[in-house]
Amino acid sequence: MSDDAKSLAPSRRQFLTGAAAAGAGAVAAGAARAATPDPLITEVQEWASGLGEGVDATPYGMPIQFESDVVRRNVEWLTADTISSINFTPIHALDGTITPQGCAFERHHSGAIELRKEDYRLMINGLVETPLVFTYEDLERFPRENRVYFCECAANSGMEWAGAQLNGAQFTHGMIHNMEYSGVSLRTLLEEAGVSPEGKWVYVEGADASSNGRSIPLEKAMDDVLVAFKANGEALRKEHGYPVRLVVPGWEGNMWVKWLRRVEVMDQPVESREETSKYTDTLANGVSRKWTWEMDAKSVVTSPSPQAPIKHGKGPLVITGLAWSGRGSITGVDVSLDGGKSWQEARLAAPGTDKALTRFYLDINWDGSEMLLQARAKDSSGYVQPTKAQLREVRGLNSIYHNNAIQTWWVKANGEAENVEVS
Image 1: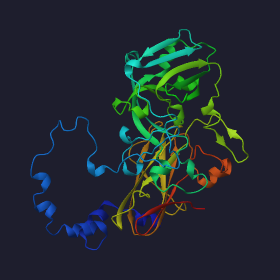
Image 2: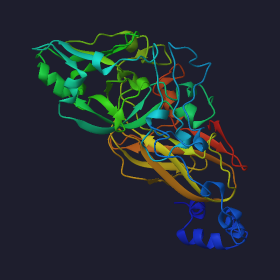
Image 3: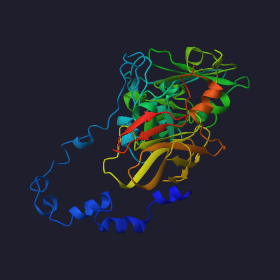
Image 4: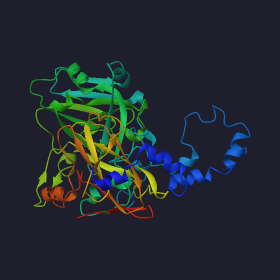
């Protein structure tokens, strides 16, 4: 750690002494105000003067009104219609790693449909010994698994390829959620049907009108793919594929087919619309790469950020964000305050887990200087998140998908932040 970095890193003693000393920053100012009677403590308040709501007032718990701003948002000029609708997780306002279903991003190709459990059917056909059809109740009788994985749209950060555009972590990186999925291993269902030796691929498709279908190598299908019917302990939401969806850990979200209705074992890929005209990476020479399924290591500082400015002024500051990798687990995150000139190792809230979000923190003593905040993730494969310049050198500017470049927030002296690029 450089001398400059050491000067920004607060110790426990600095926090305590700073809080007790007048004029020593935001914490000290708060302590000085607390030395005089505070009516919020000394006087009986309205909320303590009578009974609150009973337990039957809200049959399904909803966030308190004071958190009503923590919601999914869309960008009208980007996806204004039902056919290409998408919204963004408010990652700037969340902590930990688990995304509540109610504010987890959603993407539809023909709108979210309503399909009853009683009407649900899943067919396994193609190159199998015994074609099978499962009801929802059938799926519930198979051995169950619980796994935490992130789901990221391949177009997450896609608008940033040509330059800084959308101002906020929710909009630049919010096409992602991280939930605990409960369901049945796809391998279990395929083994029940008996995969023929000629089978090399599976083609999966949903029950909605979009005919969204993707080809998946049999090796992946027999590895960690789940047929899920619960998320975060409750039934899937309509917008997340109720009653059953596919979970394809570490791979782009378009392959996580919702309202899953069919899995066909094949000897070759289908090369459908969603894997030819879309979800391919177009290089500078106009050639498009196919089969770029895995989501490379990526990270972003969620606070401070444009939607989460610094409001308390100078003093102790918690810098936090998220990191993830579709190729394994996050092993470390570095944070830069000066646009990548120097780096400090952030603290992981918990050891990184396979193909799931990891929360990181860096505690500093902010002196009010401008910062160019960046995060850089490393994963268990040894991969290090690239800069935009490094990524563009390989991919050019024609891409839409798989932008995992380092993000920069310009934090100003007044605590506000802006989406920028650094050369």
